[in-house]
Image (cartoon, rainbow over all chains, first blue to last red; front, top):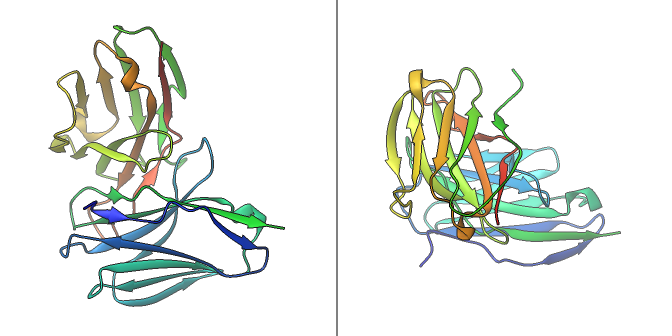
Length: 110
Length: 114
């Protein structure tokens, strides 16, 4: 079992729709959870962090965390073609390395 | 602060040669990470430092790889006797051990071994 699992996609959504990206993790000791966006040929860019159960909203992005289910998700509202990228989920224990999933490719069609 | 900086951005080398990459972290960050990423995969952890101490090194990392962070500032990653399988994007990230542990990546170094 991989430590962090994501559907590889591609996930295709029409412009203006809500994109829902999901991630599960195996280490119950994980304390910090992150979503990175990565455009083709570029490095990962941090877009959301979440540390406690529940929802965290930042603009069009909402991160959701459920530690009991070992599940974290990212919702993108009003999806734009510029949101087309690979979205990486990452988790870590405090003071430890980040462990990444393989990423989900998102395609927003205009 | 201009963020995490990596040099060079691209490197083409012949198999068997040694290469060295440099990473300058965000100035107030005391943690520095090296990752490797190949096409279609997420970043794979290589090693990380807190200040000048190397706290963890991936078991997947062969003895041909070595990293240093003298004085707890910039870091270098050296690959000796490069192989074609070393071709990848090498990513550096930094974070603080205080407060949030958000890590920020540099632009990466694209290595091609021919």
